[in-house]
Amino acid sequence: DNGGNGHLYTFDIQDQWDRARLMPAQLMHRWTLTLGDGRQTLDKYAPYSYVHSDAEHSTMFAEWLAEWLGRKQARLTPSGREASTLVSFHDVYKWLPTTPEGQCLRRMKTATGITAEGAIMLKFARTHAVFPHHATLSIAPSHFPRVWQRVQAARHARGLDDNWVCDNAKYKDSRHFKKSWGQMTEQCKRMQRER
Image (cartoon, rainbow, N blue to C red; front, side, top):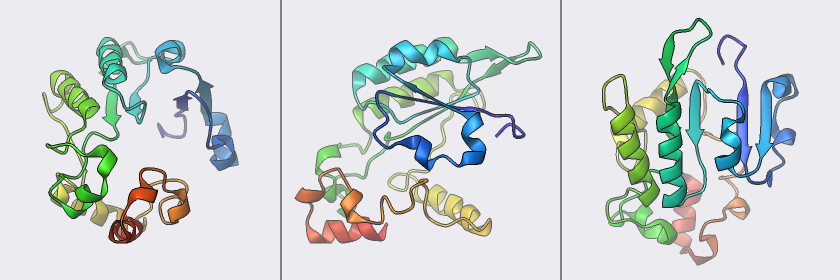
């Protein structure tokens, strides 16, 4: 938030969710949506203090993003000091195939529970992490259940519920599930609804 002065830049190929409709009116002046291939548009507003990637899930894009972030990792603050860009990634970890959750995720099975693009992002993070040096943090319940539980406890202590997305109904209503929903067993569908 940066003391009420932060700005959110969103980049996507298309706006299939009509994001402006979901953005609170009082925050619209602090949000910019840029449509187009990120490889051509990300430099438009750089440098950034924080980058979150929930992008194309391909190794080719992950390799490009890691290279781009490596070049952009150090940035100058308004006072002229060098600062690191904070980075986070989505879809690095998946449930192990030996777990009930892993059995449900037919499209995203991996032997290690780490996606191919996730492995690239983890390598980037370990190479470029500044503090602590070469460290990463994950709250993926599939691999770090105790960390997940602590984060959930902190959220609940502050009055937040379990909805991590702005569209609270999206993952509670099975009509909004896209990935392999039609191929899931009833047990898997029940497990998804209860998460």
